[in-house]
Length: 272
Image (cartoon, rainbow, N blue to C red; front, side, top):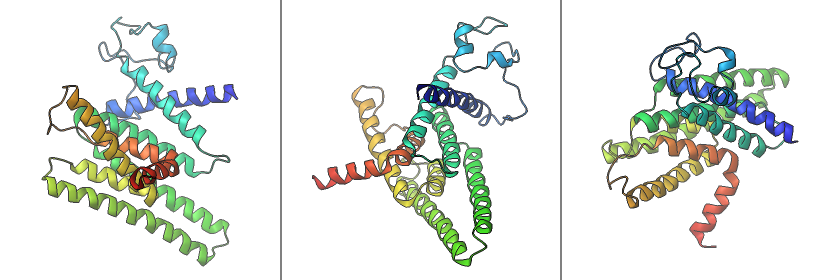
């Protein structure tokens, strides 16, 4: 079993390399498919053995093989973080794995990219939002048509599929509507348009209850983190803190620990 976990971890690290590409290129408007990975300083194009997660960084002692300049450790950190998140997600998902797990994994990876970019620039690139919407539509339409054919084109199954789609669309609309109201109330000082869009895709990929748990978790974690920054003197009351990372974290937690978090929150709220 250890070898299985190790393979999953390395697979997650490889996905972390892709997340690094998303973080570096999407906000800059660069292609994630055509451009080759290169050193930020001498622009030496990296070869395959210079792109192995963790191993390449260690063997090269954190330096470029061409110019000898120190490489940012953030790339290795992102690979490690992604590996941990993917491994935890896989371990928390009960067997047998369903096809929806692949869609959820894509959601997690893009959420991570959104969180890091928002943390750096206080902006959520719309390319990520559009990509998540397109992927969701293609997945559910394709999956729906295949299942519809597999079930003998039964009208009752088609109604069930439409109902499920509407559930996600309504959840997405309500979630984004809630954050849009916050933007209007705070006049854009408390929330931004990117948070509204992120809430919409959260509603698409999560169930209604999961979305509620994700949003509540985001506010709780965000409040605690903000309080910690104020107490430590690193932030003053009223200073802006990007909320996208907390929405991303809340979504991840709701996806794998939704029922446990719901029980915990109900226990706290009702003082049981």
